[in-house]
Length: 426
View 1 (cartoon, helix red, strand yellow):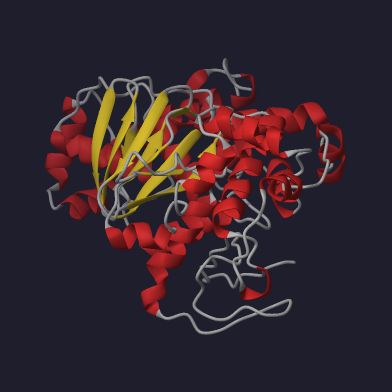
View 2 (cartoon, rainbow, N blue to C red):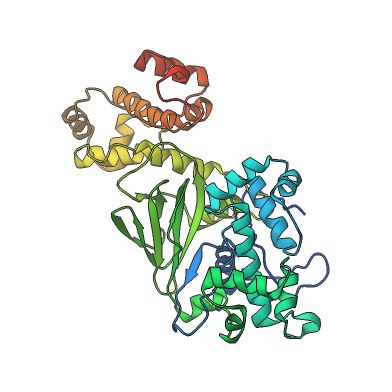
């Protein structure tokens, strides 16, 4: 299978089952049909649920613990291996055979799973097996349009386990319940679209990410906690969750927070989550980026998330600097668009102030000339990106230099050494 996107198209893909409600009937190899606007939120929510990071709030303690399918890895090899497991949970894949199938080494595959899901391949497969078994035990097999009951033995064999007792052991370990208790506890958690309609609150699983993760309040409101800091978020807000710091995201009633992308970076914001200004980004642009970054067929990194990541890295270590209000506005705007070639006059017009006011703010900040300030600020951004391991060519493009050599020349003149030799570059 493959999906080709037009340059301005937003294509959102997610894995679904026969139990998922879709806006058109599904039959044969490929099915299609019109999708009305009223389906948008529901389908985006199903996309979010397919990523496996949501935990639903339960109205009653007597209902099942609800075993969520583990989150999908984000790397190409890890995602492909996870999909092989999901497509055939009864298969006897080993780590070595999975690694061969997706063309990576077993050590790399296990490293990808641990880094991107906090689980080893074996732990991930066990979680996927019991999540599938829970649905089978509660909903039946759905063959011939009928929800015929599945025995414990059959459910165990369907997910690749040798016996009903092995399935029960897995359930006890994951949910503190036997397989029979899971079956008798009622319906499984409601579908994601039902959760939104019923206005239930949700959260993410408490986790420590090995990558910096960009999250976006797609709908409603949310609270993000990382380290000792909590941010109140409104619809449209963007926040980076720093790597290496335990975090939790709680969503308001009927709200949804989407991950937009994740990046590896050495630099850390030790203070906690970092809010970004969305600027001119619209919802379709962010949704399109999230859909490509987490595409179930072929995930790919996007230029939009790269740019937001570089902006995030450029802010590391600057929390304690004091600037005038005008300089703070200029700094924030320039960091979002460091390639801008606006003159001082154009920036003054942009902020609705006089050139003299801007010149005075620069002087008060210890800078005598706007061009000098622009170069110095670009070099500060460059240093942060170099410390984070971003390639020199990508930094040059992000900062607006026409060639890598011209950027290297300016950097060497500013620091005494070229960027490839600068301390901390990896």
